[in-house]
Length: 468
Image 1: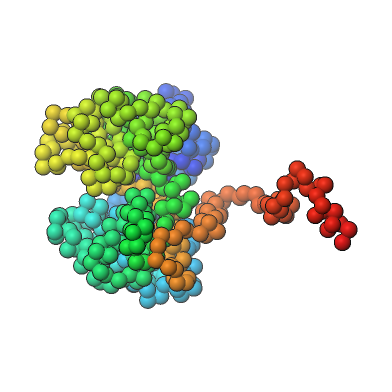
Image 2: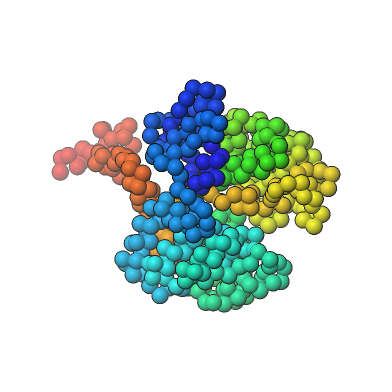
């Protein structure tokens, strides 16, 4: 299962799989696939367990992704919804000559977003933080005419200077992840026409700025779109982070189920991480500070408790997107620590004090093993979220560009329109070949009536309308 994800960067949930054979591996795959949201059938992805399980997609071997250019092109082949929205922008001509900066994790899907915007007529440049740049993908973009700023060797003042220099290229719009550059632009007094923010952790400080009268531009809350939070966070981050953790631990001779797991935070990311761990048969507890989310975790069947009480000897996964989530006491108690999603400083650790114990695995003093030095595990140890998930998220980003250019929005955080969210979802269903019902005229009429249907038949209004 994890080899399929590694070799293709495709999503398991929502996909049809066929499993051949009747041995124990085949039976376990048949159990696991529905638990991960897949459908069992006779077409789609085929698994043929043997000495090495053969994987076929619609009867053929997965496409080769031998270099960065192949990975970028393969991502584009699985992003029909973003391609459709970008084509609409091109036909409308609304991004022609618009300067758009993209400040996101740079991997093949982000590269495709940049290429789609460029092909729609925008003037595009990309920035990636030092720990969020695939240098080979950056070279592919440069070779294809898109400037890329970012260097994994930068840190401290040099990193800030590089980010400021990127902003000083001069942009109309900024598509951000974590709102790091939106906030930096405000600190440096660099003008923008508008922006779109991809993450929960990025929207929180922007809303704080708005409350304090400091947010000077309109920002579309891409993260809050149903197509983003309900899919990217739960299915995409859930799959990619749990699979990446399992890969790192396997290489070190540690099984995912060799210890209990603790998921810190039960927002959409924590929910997805817990669901994927459960599919693999892991014993899970949830630590939450929000009482409503804690109750939801309990009703989803998970044990809940204080972090100090459940972390001992556990695989602790932070899914909060908040700094100082994993403190030194937790690092001393846990067996393994990883971060799903993540912001800088989510784990209180001095990286210079880490002792290497394997690929993407370090020891924190005499305490826990830390995966990816406390960075976002699916970026450091994998290729980010599955392609189809980012197709949806980036379609919303492209829709946000359309919203920002459609009219003069006031400064502040703005929701992504529900009708645009639904239109993108319909396009995604069409791309899958799925059809759904429409509301009948009678249903629509009933929804437009404010009077209680319990009393409608005897209503004086009805009588008056009838006599008229």
